[in-house]
Image (spheres, rainbow, N blue to C red):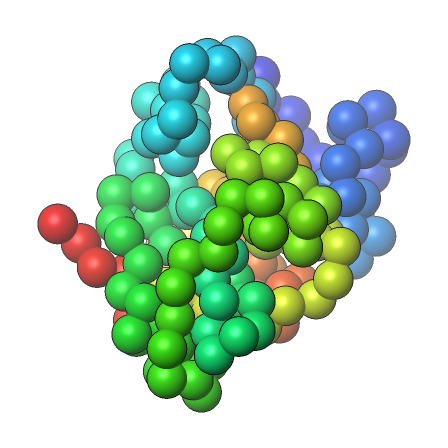
Length: 169
């Protein structure tokens, strides 16, 4: 694992997520690990590889709410409650977006979709459990890289609403 504070220089790998955070003056740390191409549980892989509590690592999901793409950010140890997410977005019906659609809309590959620096601004909801943490980790814009930042800063940079959208097993 490599951990580096965000410096704002393009050598930070230059993902849109990192550049967006740097331009906004938000403090963050970058955490990298070797992604296993056979792995499909991307969030769980990140938590294990970075030796982090899965409740602190959040996955970014693209959810179709009444025909409009939105973003749900929930702990990797949970699933998104689609009804609750739709309600937070002011909608009625929600379904996970197809992987190809998610990649096209965000400009990131599945497993590396960051809630930060997406191609277009989408309505975003962060699960309220994040607010109990001082630092949470989200994808940095590519597989094998997470960003650590405060939930308040993530909410600010994404204009996210917060709500009870996670369903824990």
